[in-house]
Amino acid sequence: MLRVTFLYWEGCPSHEEALERVREAIRLEDVQASVEVVRVDTEEDAQRWKFPGSPTILVEGEDVAPREGVPSRLTCRAYVLEDGRISPLPSVDQIRSALRRARAMQSMTRREEV
Image (cartoon, rainbow, N blue to C red; front, side, top):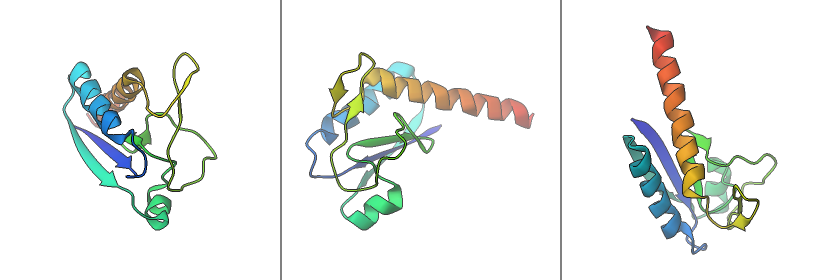
């Protein structure tokens, strides 16, 4: 089972649609995943979670769209989509790709354990 952590700040209006996209990606990939929804309320929470903005989606602890050098803070997040446009949400395909990567890593780890 994959572990998905959905981090959001109530001040950004896009988090509900983002969570719907997470659930759609899980369904389309036909994977078993647990989704933990975490509300980030304070700057201290943002620092603890290394929160680059809302919404942030982690699959097995890895950001679906990692960006280096982004400070941790209570803010809305911007994603760069596959066609180069900026969006407040990751695409379903970006989330699906992260699910596939995590599933492949789990498969490799299982083979190494045998």
